[in-house]
Length: 279
Image (cartoon, rainbow, N blue to C red; front, top):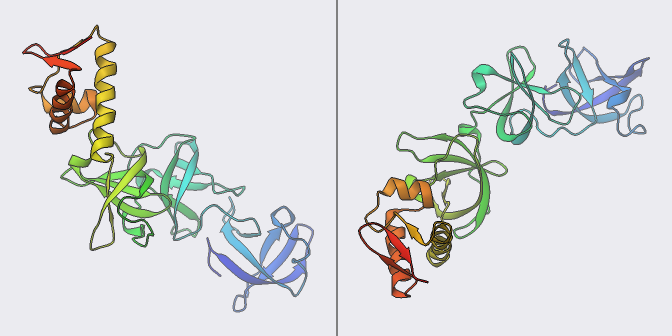
């Protein structure tokens, strides 16, 4: 009998609280309470039933026909139900939430928000979870270059490459020059573009769009900035790259290229002070 998994067990007898079940090789019976029975007709003495097995608050093995949102050995995107003094609790769709011990929280997780977690069985035989999903992510994906996807940042390499859990459980990375805004663990990123498939199966991602789409978007942001500041901004093609990254979420190379196109189209002019909107 495996805790945290679906087990096929035989119904042995009925009781005041539910039915007792038993595996082929187990001597000990476990209870499926009446409240955990979904298909009443299937739970009859001598029938074989498929049930999810977990431990209750007292450490007793309990069975349920309810389908959990996550099982042991899986990476799943789950909502944080509560943050307490002993850790955080995750909603897996059963009456008992799963604990994320403090030592297993590698970054800040907020109540009512969703993050990727790996579910495991701890030393006491109870289900538990960790934000350390890295080695448990899959590289088996139908995504191909040019596709878009969504995912969660769960860590960083020393070179600032962002590690991403692509929904639902796929391994991806974003190199430092493929994102411009500040990222942190737990961030949910939409419309990530697949730009490379590495030999180990991980997907190389970018927060950037195609070049024309990216330049059009940046031009609109620059125009909005100018219009909101009386037609002037202190930024030009000599501006600090980090300032451009913070304000416009772009690289200096893209900024200069876009300014050049805008000047060619007589939308702006530059001087040493900055950039002016041509009205």
